[in-house]
Image (cartoon, rainbow, N blue to C red):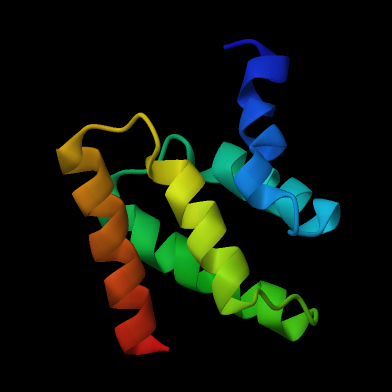
Length: 94
């Protein structure tokens, strides 16, 4: 896939109030997690969240909502539901 197209999501107007450094970190996280199975995704995301928190990287509720909205855009209902399920599990654990 074209590298510019991979980063087009960061230009979504809904993300205008999210720090560019945070968006870059999410891009790198997405690239590292792209080949992971659904069963590997939750531990991967939990590890990434713990690492980010340890390094002082915190997302506001508005930032999280905006990123999730952009992530689900253009996805099938099944894919969007999978994203919601992972987020729900992470909230229960945290």
